[in-house]
Amino acid sequence: MSDESRPSPPAAPAAARTAAVIPAAGRGVRLGPGAPKALRALSGTPMLIHAVRALAASRAVSLVVVVAPPDGAAEVRSLLDAYALPERTDFLVVPGGQTRQESVKLGLDALPSGHDIVLVHDAARPLVPVDTVDAVIEAVRDGAPAVVPALPLADTVKQVEPARAPGEPEPVVATPERALLRAVQTPQGFDRATLVRAHETVTGEVTDDAGMVEQLGLTVVAVPGHEEAFKVTRPLDLVLAEAVLARRRLNDGF
Ligand code: CTP
Ligand code: MG
Image (spheres, rainbow, N blue to C red):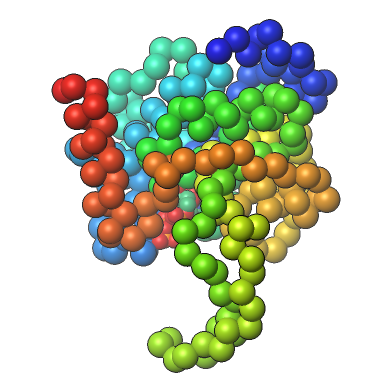
């Protein structure tokens, strides 16, 4: 892939260096009791290490900033030292915050200068293929201020009037046209200055970083996501993740 031969848009030139911020500070309440989610093992290796390797597998990524559980920065640093990671990539660890949004902001604050493209990637998406990472970076290089990997939905989605008590029937209010909906994954990619501005100016609850850029009135574009970039959220997702890893081992022949 000769990215160098592409015409370079002024905002994020082809030579722009890419940094990845990996929020990994969540507890993983929906996964059930145990260690913080990012530190739980998949095939014997912590989920976070899978996620770091997945991002560092892109040749464009020269720095990975891991946002660790607030009391777990030292443990994460020793994990990064213990597992083999690419020589060409630098690593930084910072302690995270109470919300994902805060954790991403703390990661952004720690970024040194010299990286004009920033990816934000959930540690809870350990199996994202490198082709997806590269497709996001390429769309930012092509001039988009914000890029999300996204997939069409399998399920029809209903908007409801949320129940006042758990388990109560919920009146359905609307059925958005499924063909127009996408499920959004990470890594999400940004022109760095745009993402920093979004985190400095947008307040209120958001569930993804691109949503903050939308609130600035800028265009966010979606590129094809990948089914292996699913988020490990509930116990069944661990079963799926192990199965994906087993299939990869078979395909790799070891
Ligand atoms: N995250 C974070 N800081 C927080 C909360 C979440 O860095 N205060 C990170 C998680 O570690 C995860 C990503 O944001 O990699 C996506 O969040 P989610 O899947 O919701 O993870 P958790 O918040 O850990 O899980 P749960 O909501 O079930 O507790
Ligand atoms: Mg959460």
